[in-house]
Image (cartoon, rainbow, N blue to C red):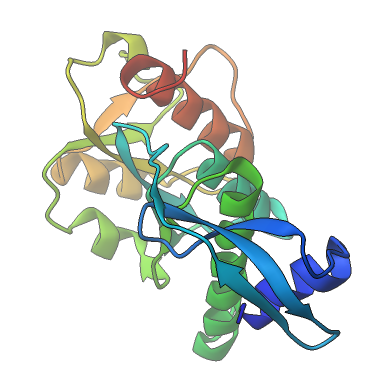
Length: 225
């Protein structure tokens, strides 16, 4: 039997009927061709035909640290970064973060963001769902041990993604808030060995910055060509 969200998508959104074929995934890097055996307004049952190992994951592992943005910008960032192949997303709180919520509200947001990640996987064909981690403070995230390249986008940096060393297989990418990181926070990222890089001559909005940086990294080191 499908989960409530999946059943709603198949039964109410797609209006699929008994006998129609569906392609399922469970996050195990495999696909499961199946046939709908029973469909009602409340539940959908399927018969799985086989298990097929099929990976479309990028060779570049990207961990996105995104300072939480206002309105639907954060949802947009999560959706598009999943489609572009990001593996892990950590929502961050910084000095200039414009979103102020209590722990309970953040927990509800986390559930919502994870559903958006799942839906993005359904849209783009990924069968491994990226992890949406609990909300963290910026310095706490920066201080975590990480065996890979750590990047902070900065409009006055001297280096670009095209000048990064190769090969790169693991990247921790920090994207700041709409108002940018404070001088103290930028200094802090340097202490934790983040490299500052430049995307171009124009200052981008936070959601545009994330998409542009991820795309550039996937073109240089991943599977976008």
